[in-house]
Image (cartoon, rainbow, N blue to C red; front, side):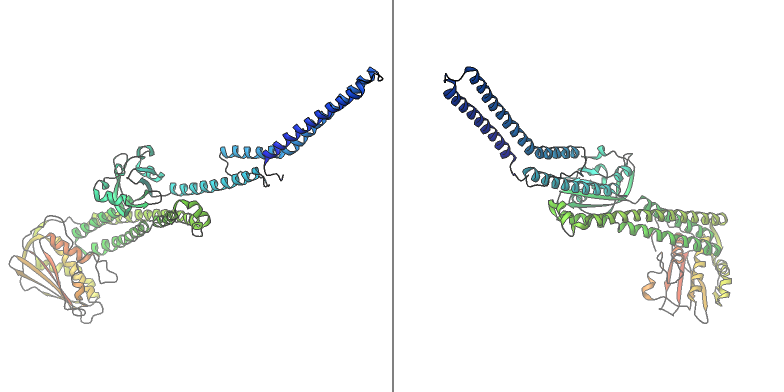
Length: 536
């Protein structure tokens, strides 16, 4: 249909109908008057014939009128049928949309008003469909996030939370919506933290969140301000397992230290320190992987994507649809979602490995504890004899490496202290000297003892590789070692043991390849050091 105005068509039909009716009425009236004038008053024409002619004229006029009406109706039906069909299409499409079907389309391919209306309707449905798909896609990603997501308004009140938040904290969504964030964390009760939160300037801060049962869980918390919607998007990654793994590592290390101190024998040093040390190294690697994953999580990429969308302003749907950068929005979100799944799987595997490592350590420690002696006993003994015992424990290794040990103990001294701690320190010092002589010719270790007032000094000196000046201040730090196969445990543990009996360890060296001298000083009578241990 080429008419552009259906109202004009309707009016044209009505006018045609009125004109046709008027014409037929006038025609009939004119014929009747003509007949009456020329025939009805003519006495020569019989009355019956006149009546017959008059009836025929009226019949012809009436028939013509009816024929005109029928013709007009048929024309109207012919013209309005496409109009009714188009209206029916639009009505059916609207009912489908009302049922939630966003895939409907109206096919009216003409330039009429209804055609323009159908085109506009199709475009509107397409835009609404794209917006709905975008929202559903984003909602699905957010709902499957492993990390907790909390959206706040500009005043810090909770607008929405994702499924992970409800699952991890045990709250119902209705309990949280409209409440201020401090309901979930006491870390924001001070002005400084609260201001940083409202400014969206918190990145990877360790805080605690409060569960509905009043228990707390540690999380890495981040907050970012979305200026476009004037909201604050907060994420929280549960680090309970990471902290638990670190605590297990610390507890196992303490047990290791206690076992090695109590035993004070080379079998414990080579057994526990070697076996458990290797397991602890594996635990360190797993914890490093977990920490790396948490710090470099895809949430950072998610925030970057959201910043790009934010910068597009209120027309973000058009930006996502038409802009070259915006068209990458959904593929990037999909990639982030897949990466989150991989992160979750990788972290899960690392936690399973941690459980295996911890079980191995428990078994090793249990075996060693079953044969270890109890330490902490204060007893009187001759230090010269204890020095000889420490040398004899290393005798086989010293002979195998062709090392000459020279004891310079002209005078005997009796002390009263923890003998196991003393022998532990001496064994470590002699072992350290032995290792420093690798690759050296004419290997020698000098061990001497002297008394200075109420203090005993045992000096272990070697002619080995020496210690550079920049290493002297680090030599007793935990984890510091200059050996390829070392763990930085022996000297650190020895320094702690010396402190526990009121003594200390010192080291002197003139540099690399100039040998080293370790001085172990402790009281003749036991003097324990109370309080918290400090790193040497």
